[in-house]
Amino acid sequence: MSNLTDQDHRVVPGQVKEDQVTSYIEKHTSQLPSSFYLGVAGISVAASLVLKLTGRDRDAQFVGQWVAPFLLFGIYNKLVKQHGSDAQVHDRNGEQELRAA
Image 1 (cartoon, helix red, strand yellow):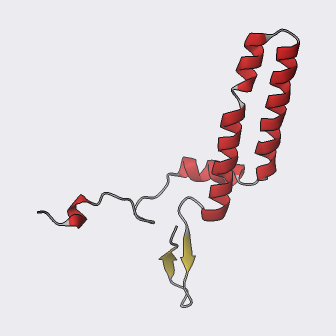
Image 2: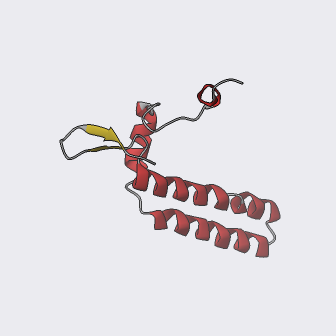
């Protein structure tokens, strides 16, 4: 039987770094409050309902499908704010260490 560590393919914190594009996007989108994404999702629901009530069924379905992505963007935004993409902290001696996720 082979060693269990040979079969462990998990990524540990700090093993892989995010690229500059991801860091740039996260830096700017994290400035938006999480309630922004919740609000936009709510507006999408309301707009979809209005479109449905006015007989524009295809448009209502199209706008209604925006709700889930907006909520997912909000979750991603919250995770970036709490954990960062490449989270590192400094220990008491000023040396960098990886923050456990």
